[in-house]
Amino acid sequence: MSRAPILKVGIVGLGRLGRRHAENLASRVAGAELVAACSPVPAELAWARDTLQVHHLYADYAAMLAHDGLDAVFLVTPTSLHPQQIIQALQAGKHVFCEKPLSLDLEDCRRVSAEAARHPQLKVMIGFVRRFDASYRDAYEKIRQGAIGSPFMVYSQTCDQYDPEGFFVKFAATSGGIFLDCSVHDIDLARWLLGNPQPVKVYASGTRAIHHDLQQFQDVDNGVAICEFDNGRIATFYASRTMPHGHDTMTEITGTAGRLTVGGNPRKNRLEIADAHGVRNECLPSFFERFEDAFLTEVSTFVDAICQQRKLELTLDDATEATRIGIAMRESLLSKQPVML
Image (cartoon, rainbow, N blue to C red; front, side, top):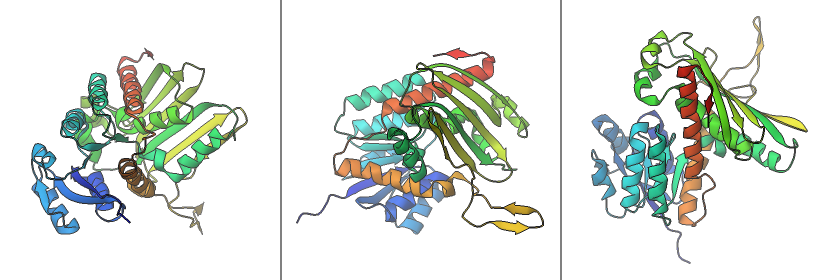
């Protein structure tokens, strides 16, 4: 019997999330082999060499794309680089996985989609990891089975643990703001869970509760947005950088016959503590831990789609629409007016 093909992968960007993807590709994803790494930071390349035994290291992206036998690239780079790096990879004949969001600019999203259409044999996927989480997937399947009747409302939040050092602040100038950086996951979830309705209008507001230095970037550390869709469905989003208890991702989907809740208690595990302070549980510190299994499933799904020539459920149109809604939310935040879509 012939052996299944092995996908030879190169990764670009080895920061916090890039290292997680690299570790999965190096040892946990059947059918994939991490053969190359690219970064302008020498310490990141040294990590890939010493920790994962990646032998082909590149400081230049174009040089890595020319690596003999390379099949696919994983882009875990600043969002401003995503569109051009995806286009370069497609033109070099490589499949592409790129972390979210696709871009901060709608025209760039369209450029990527146009280039992808010229290479239908190549797979392109944007990393909306929550679609690959077991609990969110279960909710999606139950909605499809009619468990809550017709869904008409979603509340979804991404709330990060408070970091007194303000790690994210130094990226605020290029992040696109809290809605594109955090809520884009919730936006994609809402569209997915509600059956991909078309957005009609958004309104957003926010405040700087702790990180007042965000003012120079016209950003906030807590934001709320409402999106109305064309079929009367509606979604509310909350994003925060200031949770004292840990990372708190939660989504509620309300339908005509019931409600589903994912992540109502952001518990670390099943341990409950009862003492003089009451009964409580500990919480996970970040999205890494909350979605560790989903990141692995996401990567495996992408690799399987290439090796087995399966169609990807998550499309570039989905990523473009999430960006379009996120951009409108930022416009509404700054103008303090509703934005029509």
